[in-house]
Image: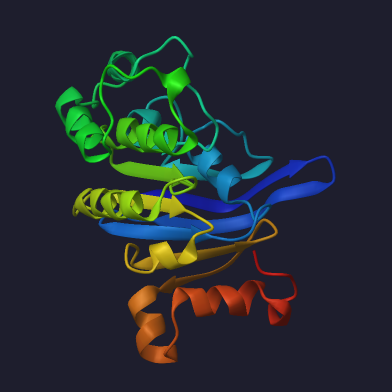
Length: 236
């Protein structure tokens, strides 16, 4: 569905992505893991066409990503991207104007689950409330690929449960979800596949149940193995 081949992005002397070959398929929830600087965000932004590769390519349904593919790929960035004058309702209308697959009905349902109301103004939202709004407006699209970059940051434990249920419900047979987070434990029960990135390179892709079965470890254990002292760097 969404595939990168030898994808490389260089900024000056630093490779944010270093020959990354990776496939994302429908019907799976992927946890993309790694400390800051691993290349997670750069890969996602390449997939949505916000970052132009230095070399290699990334394709959607076998075709290089473009404005056309963006119609079927939803991306939630870590940066705030709403105007301060907006209400939560106008955020939804803004998305509705830009994306044909955006559902106001689904948006209202997600807002209710997140305990947000249409009348709230974005400039008054706390960090956690803004994070929930970004998730709601992104997942209100009926996209074939949904990418959430650090969606759990600033969100309390109870709200994470609601978000987790929302993510699982969106995992239909033809939808691919890709979630990056430093809260590795939270993704253990949500994702079925873990992608480990390190210094712009792909370390490995592991089925989470297979890790449990064959190695008797969790993705938290694997994270410590890859990024801890034995893996050559301090874990984050």
